[in-house]
Length: 69
Image (cartoon, rainbow, N blue to C red; front, top):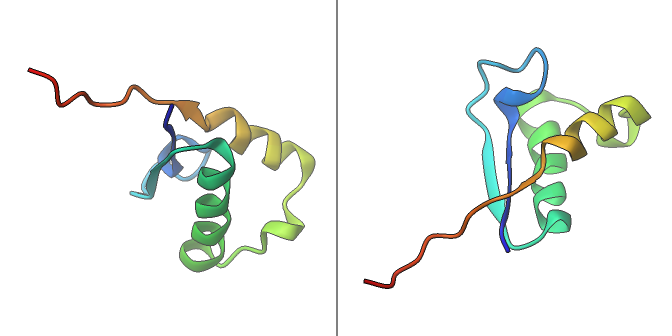
């Protein structure tokens, strides 16, 4: 099952267009960390436990699309 994260759902990031879909929560997390560094100039190793839990709560299962008729 794919998982997704939309940066605009994080408090204070409403204008950010960053959005990620991947096959696992772990893969999405890697994209979120990279996005935090590159787009927001943050160091994920400095995120507080509250920030981490907020982000993890925004990584959600996503309905896959079907190519069946």
